[in-house]
Image (cartoon, rainbow, N blue to C red):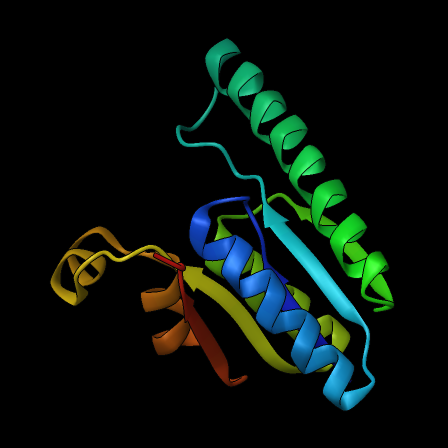
Amino acid sequence: MSVVLGYDESPGALSALRVAIEVATAYDEPLVIVHGVAAPGVTGEEYGAHHEAVREAGSTALSHAVRVADEAGVRTSVELIDERPAQALIEAAARHGARVIVVGTWGESPVRGALLGSTPHKLLHLSTVPVLCVPARS
């Protein structure tokens, strides 16, 4: 089993990283840190450039998270997945036999999340694995 974390360096993700490390430590399980890199749009030169920029930002974010987890003594692996965040996390959770998916929230209202499709909102409705939503620290 494992703990899967959605990570993008947002304030909610930073809080989620701390909680995911605690959960992974408590269960002595590896932490799989995931970043979905599907860029908005369909095709064309702009899509390719945007996709590469999202991928580079995701890679940087994941390296920061790994450094924090390493300092805490937690085994990690990382995945940049060419899907939108919720789908990327669901796929990673299935592949790694996740005990839980951990994601951060950043204070949007439940109505806004439902209308705009926040990652935590999508996961709560689509995931077959328990989802732990961690609010950003004030």
